Image 1: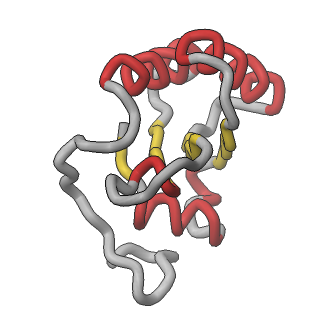
Image 2 (image 1 turned 120 degrees about the vertical axis):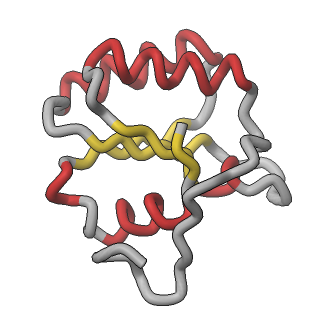
Length: 113
């Protein structure tokens, strides 16, 4: 297990890609993030990352050392304009903040986009 990952959470390096998000939506999200920071990493976490779950908002973690508050607003608008307006929890963290509880949980249980 990686440093900062809560005890009891397992890191899954490989996922079958069957998340409750279309391939087009996944591509649009990644494209919008890369448009602002080509080095950023994106994780889908929460109920949309669980094929067995129902409903739920869209939970995204973006790890970037370049993006700031205004970029987060631009990113939110860009993503929602492309995939349709819905509940989006967009969490932005710097590389040195990956051990923060929410980020660590999203990294451990989420799916890389």
